[in-house]
Length: 623
Image 1 (cartoon, one colour):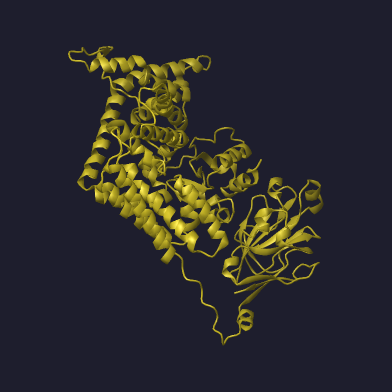
Image 2 (image 1 turned 180 degrees about the vertical axis):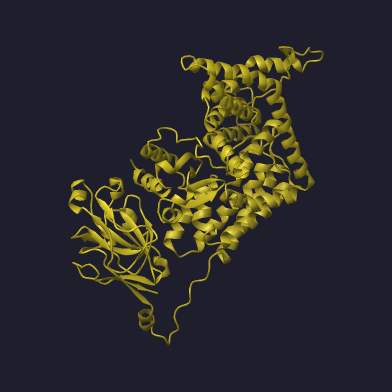
């Protein structure tokens, strides 16, 4: 499997399968809930070239891997033996703060639907654009079919949310879907329409008057109803005989929850929905310019900490209650500001690796995925991220001034421009969105190009010979293994050979043992014992990776004589490995020795001649 090794290293980095309580993914991130966060090693995960960033926020341990997150998620689930779904029960008795629990619930319910929500929103936007430009007629068969495709998800939203909410709350997902189906059943929609007619008589359930509401496209009622059903389910299971439980428990959940939803939960949740929508409108109407500036500046900060999930239901609720949402357009400048900042860095930098990363991040950012831009380019360089946020504030203020709204939900991206076209066609709000986004993009791009990157370090003074300066700042690294020296670029692994992990050398071992190449501390030891990280007393960060793809052995044939945090002296035995058994299993034992913080040095030079002995001079690091 293409992502099996990355999945294995991620699983080891989060503390192993047994440390995972639940796992979901969004557009670019694996979102773990861990039993013990202290068992996870964020530092070693961040050094993996397949991982963009690791973020701990909202009670989640988030591993950002980029656009191929779905494939990595599947590989992690398969490797860990979770099947199609990672465990979801929180059974360790730990209490989390209210914000963490709220963020976790919201992200767990809405994350699985993000892709199809974005697709539906984009299709709705293009249909609006087609009507405005005269490409389609509203009464045509083509329009009707495409409109049904774009509207089905939102019309039957309670059913979809019934599935994800039931899964998140740990109940029978088909029961919670059936509850969602009852909310959108044609009989209930017809009863709602009849109740709107003058002189309509109220209907009753066991003598209690029923308040009929159109729950199509609603969000909050089904979430509360699903939660209630999932809480009732274990109660009924305890009192119902096991021979009857499979059908009596779902029966009781439906009989209790559906009437209670129509009589109490639905009206109260609908009142709360309207309260939230009108409350937001009140705040927005107070000063749309300030609202736009604040949202444009702070959105990416919220994304970094996972707090943006608290606003996603509010956007969807605005669409459900008001038929439009003015919050989403304010985020366009926030997204495109980071894209512009990344473009400025790409055009300015002389670092080939950074330029390639920025180029791919710009492409992803245009389509609404900003994590590669933020974590890989702008945030590490600090000033471009700030310029992107300032640009977002400027553009958000412009869009707020023009009261721009969207009329369908989707990821904020270049496609959002199609979603802001009102039924009457192009107006000032559309042009306001275009101008605000361009202001944000151009400001961030120009500012990042001119001031985003720190100036290159000044060369040593001419009167101080460079050779003498380097000799005074050199550090020596001895060989941890006896064997044949292999240039790093000849290693049969693109990650090591490309130098992405740092400069260094590789050795084909003569003996199955690794000793400490420097005096220092063990900062990381993989669970599979095939790799070890050491920080020398002089500040050099070394990675010794025994063999190629040997993580797949899951620790077989490796014996560690140290643990993380141990103090080691040059020559101390670190790891023993059965070289013959590893080779018999089909693995290459060529061992890269990498200086992970190579960027802190002028150069990393190979000293030794092949073959090299243990503790013989191997590398010289020049500052």
